[in-house]
Length: 263
Ligand SMILES: Cc1cc2nc3c(=O)[nH]c(=O)nc-3n(C[C@H](O)[C@H](O)[C@H](O)COP(=O)(O)OP(=O)(O)OC[C@H]3O[C@@H](n4cnc5c(N)ncnc54)[C@H](O)[C@@H]3O)c2cc1C
Image (spheres, rainbow, N blue to C red):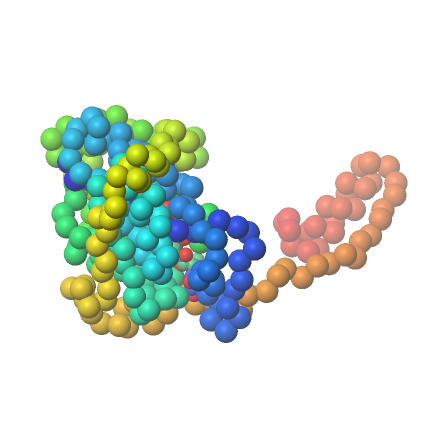
């Protein structure tokens, strides 16, 4: 079974700066780590590999420093890393990120299963998995809490949508986004780290893709763009009402109605 896990490098700190011109996160030089949700996806892939054999590759799109998360996944047990990196990919929104990933995946090889984390801790849209699957014309299920069986060309999964569980059987190749807390991600192995002098990492850029049209990538290929980033305005004005509870309730209701918070 060939499994590919999509992992993203996210800021490891809350003090990140945003470029006021472009509205893009300044990622260079910022302390970074693997998106915590992706650890569960990597662990899930390694569990499947132990059970059914095969390979586990990991892929990321990001600047050169994103190579660190590929290495971390390889030290956890993955076989190969794929870094998709090119200045032309900078400033990508969800559509452009998913399209770039789909192009990179096509180039990387054929996989039975593609796993993603449920969401990231920075962009946090939870849309990259499903959109990548659509670009790859692949069946997909989100918020997977369990992969109970792999039988021939089928996988049996349980999805968790707001505590409503559904068992779904789908054909491979397919893409699943993995819920958090479904396993205990293993730590990177110190032994693997010291033994592997050069972890197997392939680098892909725009010129390696099937579609080399720059307009489909990065800021140019992003239908959504940040116009302005600003902290929410602070409003410290307040009104104090006194009186019996019922009367106060009615007054507050009237105010909320006036402000159109309730109808
Ligand atoms: C309206 C809007 C506008 C935006 N505009 C900009 C912008 O102008 N510039 C900008 O820099 N950012 C922008 N972003 C953020 C950017 O779109 C996201 O960081 C990026 O699309 C990834 O989405 P996400 O972090 O929400 O991933 P999610 O969908 O939450 O991630 C789910 C899973 O997808 C996989 N995944 C996600 N990203 C990657 C990746 N890079 N490599 C490998 N796997 C991945 C991981 O498995 C992850 O767990 C914007 C976001 C929105 C919503």
